[in-house]
Image: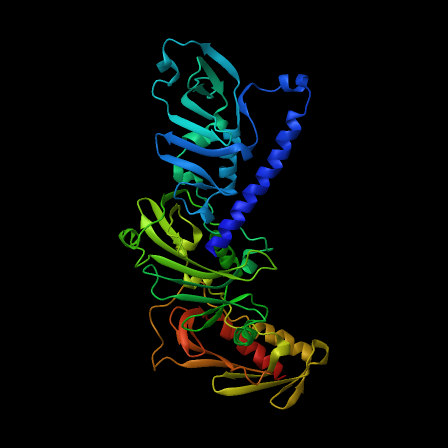
Length: 469
């Protein structure tokens, strides 16, 4: 895979070089009057004529070397190199423009920072010629750079943005993109199955995408109607799409602030603490609608005032700031409504209030065909729709997970059981117990995690009694 990416990167750069070569050829064919109107230049040739660029600056010493039909930068992993920056370096090495001559035969190079240059750039061309460029200080007003060609007697002023690649650290050539931006319509489509684990969490959070490729997840999601993702942890929940959007958006298109280290050994990664990460995120990433999902693993550890991140086995340590996914919270990811199945998927609903059973049986496949009975007697479908809307409005109180659980002395007040037309789908059961402070304990399929407002039972009792009339 790395070799394929490297070949793609080289081909991309070569294509850009070929296009620039054609452009340069076109420029050379212009009339002399047009050429005279351009900025003066020490060199103006095709990128294809470059053999090697050697850079010594205040941060690093490294070589950009042509190998066959491509270029390599020192020991950087080429599949992680920013191709735009590499191309800019080659452009700036093949076309050395300057704004003006500042001084001829200078007596004091220290005025221009050229006695101890910030960078020395040696550019070797395929024809055997070599050019050495000294990069000095910035000019006080324009912030452009003083430069000088070794062996010449003129101090030149060059646009600063054409010298950045010569003066910047080697690691800046590595891409600041940790996870690409997706070309799908939403982060909810860009992220498939995703899990969060690590020392920051009490237990892992496992989220599954609802897709036609996963029959079991598709069946489980019937409990929630039109869900994009479900949480499969201590129990099954629908994911709150608003919260998921925030979390997923912070993972998709994740950028670094800078690279801390690259080509790290196992020992170096261990020293950062990646053997026991603060947070580990594993997810299926979808770049385009046509692309197959790519499995990505991110490991995160605290680092100074931010966080250090590595992706997969790339051995590049990135520094990131405080992203939304670092605050992932199970209780916030859970959608407040316990169950919200489509009425067309329901075969039977049992509502037990204070020991009295109310059994609703639904027949028909489409909305227009639906009919319903209550305890064996026909019931107006519109009345049941209104009642059903109340049933599925059961939701937690939004105050997070509870610490205590109901005991044997607390009365079971209501049981709601949903049975489905799909015989392979297990029923869903909501049991509501009395709790203090006008609250109820909500036991969802045998697990109690949240409380809910007592008002729900009052409304349900009144609506159920009304159906008997």
